[in-house]
Amino acid sequence: MAATTDGNRREPYVGEKRKFLRDGFGTYVFENSFFRYEGEWMKGKKHGHGKLLMKDGTYYEGQFINGEINGNGYKFFASSKAKYTGQFLNGEMHGHGIMTYHNGNVYEGQWYKNKKQGFGILRTSDKAVYEGTFHGHVRDGEGTQTYDGSYQKLSNGDRYEGYWVLDQRNGHGDLWCADGSHYCGNFTNDMFHGAGVMTHASGIVYRGDWINGFPITMATKIVLLDVPESPMIIRQGQPFSIRVECRNDEDELVEDQGREIQVMAGFKYRVPKQGSALFDMIEDVEDTPIPTPFGYDVVPYPLTDQLGEVSVSVTEDDSKMSTMVRDDEAEDKGEEEGEEDGQEEQPDGGVPPTGREVTEDLEAAASVAASMAALLTNGGEDAGADLAAVALGEEGTGLDGDLIGAENSRPITPGDSAAEDGADGSEEKPEEVTHLPPPMCSKPTLNGVCEWDNLQLAPAPPMYRPFVIMEEEAGPKKKSKAAQIREKIERKNSQNPAAMQKSVTEAEKPAASDEKVARTGEYVLIVQDVTSPPFMGRRLEPAFLLMKLKKPKKIIVKKPNIADRERWDTQRHILAAMSRATGSES
Image 1 (spheres, rainbow, N blue to C red):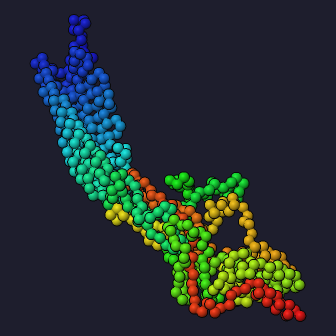
Image 2: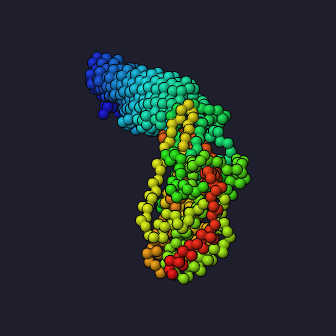
Image 3: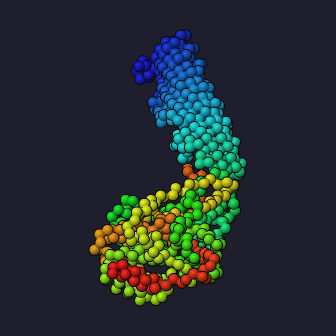
């Protein structure tokens, strides 16, 4: 420590001297006691290598020239725990140097009067690196910045090349995003602003002006075009088309390129009642309901463009019918589209292009006729009484009261091949397997427009929940007259195991036509933006369309010489069958 003079005064310098001047190595404590120097001296000045310590713990160690900190050295900042290694000029960081901050950031580059200025590299993490020019301690000029996701919500791996002003992106630049998106254009205050081109990772390409980070003409909603009415009437088995546009809030077309648009259908969502078969499993397997503007939610329903026009094949016996009448006459009355009450007429021998070709009533009549034939063969004496009860019905009406004996029409008789097959146990047809159609794929927009052709509501998948719940809520249906007679005949046939087994097998088979078309009712068409990732973090407002599915229009197919044919008399034919059966037994 310094020696004392006059008993009380401490000598501030301890070290070598020459000609009464500090020269060589020595230690000097300044009068304010804040600074202390240890190192080389020359002619009374700090010169050479030395260490200057401050009372707060900050210190410098390096070169001194003529009493000033000049040259290369190392400085530790006690308050910030930062460390600098590099060049100094008159006690300030000046020239090339490396600053290591307490948080791990590292700057290596040019300094000017204690500030980063000139070319440098700033590493704020392993992946966040800026390489370019600085001015006034901030990024300013041309440079490249890679991001790690911690800066203004940019993704890890994003990279910017362009101009900076006051530590923000300003001027022309390119931004490559980690998801594959690329923007080339002008920036202002770190945002897209001015002319620029965005090639989005989803495939959308926008070329135009930008304001505050967003396109000046950005689409906000999807609009359906050429929709004549609501609800839109569609027919079973008949395809339809839709066309949509991407528009902004001013209802102007925005010519987006490559935006992914999806079309789907939905049916009204129904919650199963507690205690029903679906209640316990609904939470695990239920589709998420989709809200609609029609006052209820929907769940997805199969929609496809792979069906084409659906029709039911006509058997040889069915083709002999002189007239075929659609069974939706009551439904078509008073339709919104103002159809005429007349029927559409097909050419001679023609087959209606779409929809069912044999009504459900005719199919039921054929089934009952087949059962009658079996009863006549196996039923014994009671068969005549049962059939006589049927014969008491009105002339010209079928077993369920529906019109099947109208003029110029001929239903299937017990003598037809279909009835005979049901009676004698001939070989059954293999069961048809229902194949679900492929789902709809999304489509990219072209100049802001997207359209679909040949759309159809596909048949419902097995155990489609809304339909199952509707059937549970409705309860058992009231049986028709034909069904009641069929049950009575089956009870008679129970004495014959072979006939009973065939009746049960036929009852379990679903109608082929039911597997080919969707159920009539109200559906919702939904067109939505599924662009992934969303363009600029936003999706378009979806479009909804209410649709009403109906049966095909009624059609009458006329054939020549219809007037010459004898009118069908159900009562007479049943009595004749009874007579033949009685004669064969005798």
